Amino acid sequence: MTVPPPIVAPSILAADFARLAEEVRAVENAADWLHVDVMDNHFVPNLTIGLPVVQSLRAATELPFDVHLMISDPRRWAPGYADAGAYNVTFHAEACDDPVALAKDLRAAGAKAGLAIDRDTPIEPYLDLLPSFDTLLVMTIKAGFGGQRFIPQLLDKVRTARRHVDAGHLELRIEVDGGIAADTIEQAAAAGADAFVAGTAVYGADDPAEAVRRLRQLAERAADGS
Ligand code: DX5
Ligand code: ZN
Image (cartoon, rainbow, N blue to C red):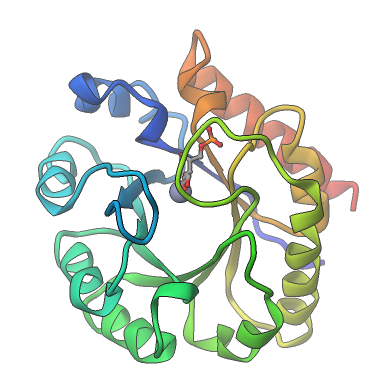
């Protein structure tokens, strides 16, 4: 396997929204990316933050932003996040009828492009689109809320994607999101994921930075062993 060193991306969905900048700084020296969940109370029932908060946060940290858009009509909104300086902008396959066109727009705006696949969406129809993307986000829960239980069956999609990526020599991160913690990250890494979002497991810990380091160590070890 040609898996690069793992990325750990704490999700600020589980942070204290009244102290966002402080919460981000708590993981600044440990995290690889900062995962920012944007929800619109339409594509998913939950509602979180939008562009103004991302713009303000961008000025508060050096960490690359991994923006996960759980919104309808991403063609209208996603490029604004790239313009705001997001490192990676991921939108949902279920919300977009021309994912390749939007990936091109995002790359043209200077961001990496990510495609997210929700719990009930099969991966197969999207495999041929992957050369247009930098990140594939495989949900390991149903998108919409933090703190849900990890669904191990969804790792079959990660395995399928990993085979496809390796066989095609694609440069693509395979990211998992939902229920990633010390007791689940190893199986996700062994399945071929190389980027790991963790909300509750990081911000629910007494020492968020230490939790990030521990998760990375577990992922590294599991990837070595596979
Ligand atoms: C949920 C979000 C996740 C969420 C994960 O739809 O996409 O990023 O923060 O939270 P945990 O790690 O608590 O499952
Ligand atoms: Zn997310």
